[in-house]
Amino acid sequence: MYTNDCIIFSNSDNTINNLLANLSTTFLLEDQVNVQDYLGICITKDPVTQSIHMAQLGLIDSVLQDLNLMQDSKVKDTLLSASCILIR
Image (tube, rainbow, N blue to C red; front, side, top):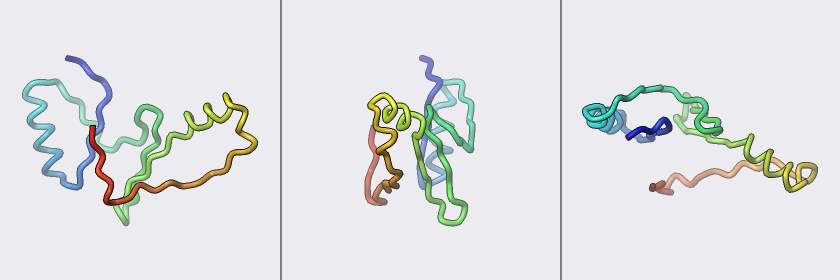
């Protein structure tokens, strides 16, 4: 099996380290540690609050241009609720 795109989030370093250790027994892994761009998504982490901000501006701009809505667009932050659980 080959995949070149995988990103793992957790509030526990131990959870990530254990997962990577388990995966590395079967797969060759390359840990990028601090990812700033992933599949066109810009990822930033606030060092004080430890919050993560993700934005996909390139795709958003492309869709707005394709639909001729660029002149009418406005920037609005949409924050994900801390109680929201992301599943795959």
